[in-house]
Image 1 (tube, one colour):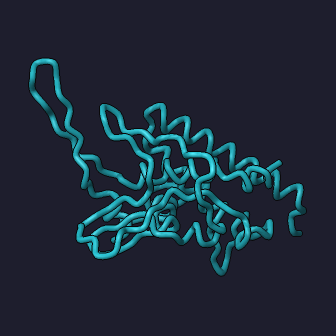
Image 2 (image 1 turned 45 degrees about the vertical axis):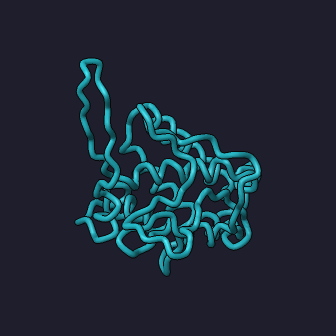
Image 3 (image 1 turned 45 degrees about the horizontal axis):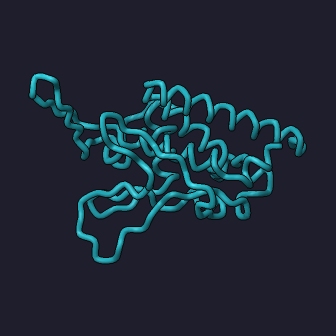
Length: 199
């Protein structure tokens, strides 16, 4: 029996609660919590021949507006990698900045398939990043890392820390998809139309 509208809205509220809890845990230092963000995004946005996303069940997949912070690479850019999600501060800590009010939005299906990462000549969409975490990295399944997950895991940033004795240490920042998933959670939680649907 199909779920009615109020039951679907209850499920949406549950997923939003999961997302907020995962953001709080991530910000408290539990970086692997990003994998569970990937699972929530999968529930909300991912459709296959055998499963239907919550937004599709709600009849909102092609119309609901979701906030985006993604920026396109300028034409002719010659680089090996780029994170296309704006709004990170790199310093003693790495943390997302608040999403400005009035940020641009995309329909949910376009948002899900918008590129957010570039590496070695390939673009990776939100769907690819979230599903790598959910399907390969232990969110809903554990499986051998495929090319997508390897590209997202392998470090390209290095963090340099200066110490009081004048020495410095460097740390490779791997699992780049964790940081991206954290930003995707911000985008969803700062999407007024989605939050209104949950009321």
